[in-house]
Length: 481
Image (tube, rainbow, N blue to C red; front, side, top):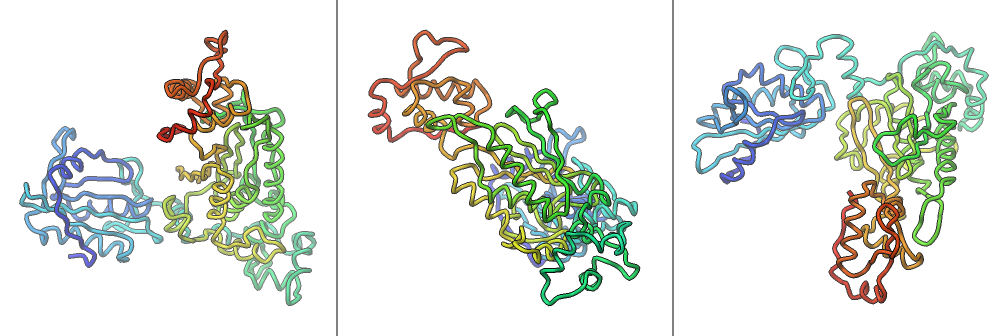
């Protein structure tokens, strides 16, 4: 049996809940009769993706519509399957096995939690698998295995060679400025060789080009710029109709200046757009440090093997920063603020040697961004891992509940409309906003403005509402979504 085996007794209600769970890309159920070799494919698939859970000893009817408890007669009967997990993964920190019993059943079911592994896990047939939907698909070609290595951070595209040579790079003003600040003093050639961003044949690597070339976009097209799009909408997707004239725009240059120029440009674009504030028409503002850290993280940790530029999409109520490449190594959306792992370790290390480096607080970037948003009383950013990228969403939404925001606004305004309230609170659905008004009306805080009906309706404070607000200690909190 596995060294990290945990025994748990379940209630019948717990069993019923497990049986009703639907299989998906992070959860699977396997009957006790599954062959260890086939079982190893599921173990490999979960370990090579973002991890997952396997219920071993849960079978389904022929039509796959109903699951039922079909456990092992003894714990030892599952030894072959448990040994598969032990032998394939090896590291006890990367999986947990629980042995489930229930007083209504005399058999055993095993709940196996597999975490995302830093290394590639091969199944018993010597092939690695990945989880796609509810399928375990083999990655059995050199191209797919290479892709898996890059996704996991086992190898990094930053060490690939470009067509650029030292003779082409030596006159770069970016390199010259950097070398002038290196202590102890050195030559460009010696520095590039010492830092292993140039090989013995004087070929420059991807890392060297991104850091020291004046125009790395000429060497690495479609993967080294930042594209900015500005949409006049708060919908989930921007459209051609809502895209502002003059956009998209591209920011180019070495990655040190790319970060600074992008943050500056985005700040100017956002702050040029007035929105309805609590007391007046005011400029929308995000913490500069939050935008800086999120964009820095996107540039330094993106997968440069993917032919896609970083995209920054500015909506009326949020900013989205999408960086190509899945989260590397053991990093997940759950541990990203606690764990550290660099896909491009060389780039991260060398850019820290520039004057006033963008990553001077190594390992604290996203934490700093999250804290800055909270200090401005805005919602913390949301991190989403997509099929081939990582999306960070920075919402311009206040931490206060919708009712409080509206009542605060009406302390300095005679009335408020549904559209104004939606802009103020970040609620995009007019009907949801209407329900907030009705709740405030039921509490006798608001009333309709006479003569303003239907789509032109306006709401105002009820006389003596300020006193009612002070006395209303049980006012409910409202979800903005």
